[in-house]
Length: 345
Image (tube, rainbow, N blue to C red; front, side):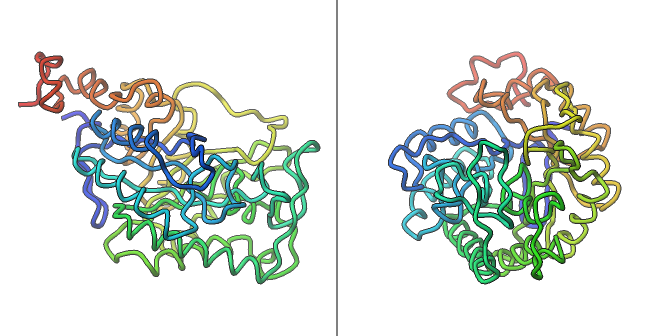
């Protein structure tokens, strides 16, 4: 059996294969109310039809001013729940599992006036200057993550991912180059993330795994490296993270060190986290070649592989990858005539 097609179980989450649809913003909430619409329903359910084991709904924000743009999804109100439940039910009917990534963009909220962050340091010279959150506002934001997680559970998701990567608010708090606070959330750079994890866990079923996406390294000049991110991740694991989703960068424009752009360029980061933390890992980053994805799993660099742009190009990437690598595929009955040579027996 190819590793891509091998089932995987983490706590109460059982997946039919090791393929994850990475969360990717669609910027398609035309009503600007945070509520998913027909585009989102078709987008996610079609990837379930395509055979993906786990689908992670794009960055969904806990506050209206926590969105990257006003066209992003949100979970700051109970009114959002029914539309998410419709997507969850649609994905489940196709035999896939589904999670949601909850987040706050912090200083990267383009349409907020002003955006907020741990400090008043802007992303770049031509970006909006953020307003530093007060200590009390930090605690309110933690409660917003908790409420969003409760709504996600009500919508029926199988797992939740906390976004601690790509320069968004949690990343901003644990970055020494961005967080210059003098209160408790500046003295302990992991405190904000730890308290969010604890708050989210308190409203999740005990057998539901909690995931976290984290940037393993920063690319801005003076940015942190693996030692720092792994130390943060150790604290996050202690607080209750069950699996890490390893990416990199996103905090600001790259400086002297630039991110690579070859297939699997972030896999060494995934391996480093797995070895240091002894925790399940999702690898991501130009893995759309099925053989690169298979090698990542077969070499035990990660337990799951997340496909981003490859799934934007092909809603049926998972079926096509299994057909290529495993020479076996189990398509929906409506599509079987197209896969006669490689039907799973």
